[in-house]
Structures are given as C-alpha cells and as structure tokens.
Amino acid sequence: MNALRHPPSNYIDGTFVPIPGDAIVSTDPARPDRVIWSGAAPVGHVDDAVAAARAAFEPWADRSLDDRIEVLRRWQAVTTAHADALADLITAEMGKTRAESLFEAKALAGKVDITLGPESMSRVAPYTVAVADTR
Image (cartoon, rainbow, N blue to C red; front, side):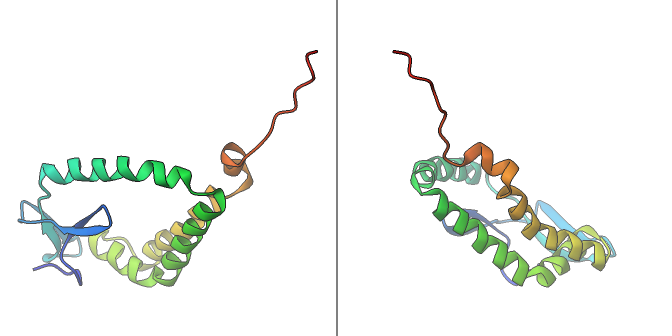
C-alpha cells in the first residue's frame, strides 16, 4: 500500500511506467508504519529513459529559445499552483517540517527564474561577436 494517489512510476518517453515490487520502501519518518511508496525499478527502465532522452535531445535543441522559455514558465506555473501538495509529499517522505517543505516546494518555481536570469541566459541566448574586417 502506497500513500501516493497514483502507483509509483518512472516517467519515460511521455508515459508513466509503473515501478513493480517492494524491494525499496520509503516510509514516513514520523510514522514508520506509513509507507509512502515502494518499488524496485528494473534496470531496463534506465536503458529506456536514456534512449528516450537521447531521442528527445535534437527536437528540444531545434525548438526556438522562446519555445523553451515557455515550457519552463509552464513548469513554473504548475509547481507554483501545486506547492501545497508538493510540500505535503516532501513532509511525508522526508520528515521535514511543513514550513521547510513548503519553502522547498516554492523554491522549485524560483529555480526557473534563476535559470532564465541574465547570468544564465547570457550563456545560451543568441549573440554575435563583432570582428574587424581583416582585408
């Protein structure tokens, strides 16, 4: 029995792939009798995930910078909207206080701002280098 609403899964190639078994058990540190999730992902899941990531790389790289920024902003909106639920999961699995878990959940959205900030964007945004005419 898991405390999650959905079976424990790995997200591979756009699909949630269930994690079978109970070789790994995560319990609530405050209530050790409460199982948060259990499973033992087969090694094949790693191979499948790596293959999916490799296949997704070129299409992702071919997307415009604006498209990729929009994806990150959508992720930010989702994590912001679900910060309370994420905090509940963090508290249950890690045993952190609710306040600390909520801070951590809200920090997910902040990481998008860091990623899209001027320091990071200066390394990925299109740029040109002025070169003097050599002739």
